[in-house]
Image 1 (cartoon, rainbow, N blue to C red):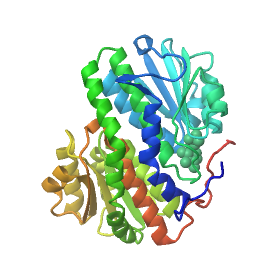
Image 2 (cartoon, rainbow, N blue to C red):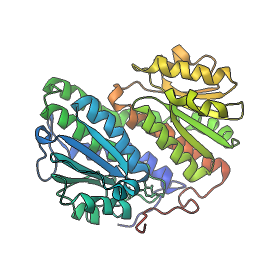
Image 3 (cartoon, protein in one colour):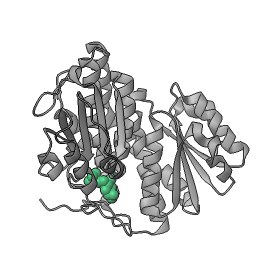
Length: 365
Ligand code: G6P
């Protein structure tokens, strides 16, 4: 089928907007009533002792998010690494290890090489891919499709949330397999997940607010992203999106690391994007945010209504999202992170779909 922009100005805008639909489709491919059923061979997590997650770029941040999920939900030891480091470090792969590779294209050279390194060492090679006929899919024991559809924009958007979706389903399955989650708790999370596409649409409606903020962010030379827990990998992804397409220097830090360096950068010219739903770590994020504001930093707080009511007073700008169960927050907060990068790039007049120096798929080392 011919892929066109379907009335959108850019593929990236179209792909951001498609997320509720592709996520709903993807879920259908993995759920049978209230059970998680993986396409292809069954994966029994009771026998898995350790999970090694490897990827590059945005897919790496999806893996980093998954580490939090697998550890918290399934109490499972997880290692995460970028493929270019993993492949040359010669990491020991112990028996009971499942090696999992995440790749939109399924052709990234470093990720494929890391997979081959694990070939005869890991108990099983699993991949989470968008392109089902790709090298990484073909060389895996089990290839799990993310069902994002063709992604044209060089900066990954819908592939990221669809990767998160499959990784979350895997973590939930692991939690049930390993006796850390009841069927009742699973059913509850799955119904929240089924309701998520509607909630993502509500987040999409913040686009105009985000565009207004983005026009000011476009003036900045540096932008800092802060997040704790599940919002830390998302902060990294938000900073990556922004630098990829707007060419503004953006860095992400775990909020708690602020005082170990980045606080030295804070002044009134540096916007600080704080990703903080009103969850168990909220108070800690707020105190980090206050440290920024005490030094004249301009805080853009992305939170929910409860978070805005509690901490939205003295911040520079607030974007309010619907409230979701904490475990789902990365899928929701990805939307404003993507929209912020998109609108900032538009304000700067850069080539959003084809940013300079970047390739959609890096098939050479
Ligand atoms: C390139 C793309 C990124 C992508 C990364 C990994 O850098 O520009 O958007 O996240 O490669 O690609 P993969 O296809 O393995 O997910």
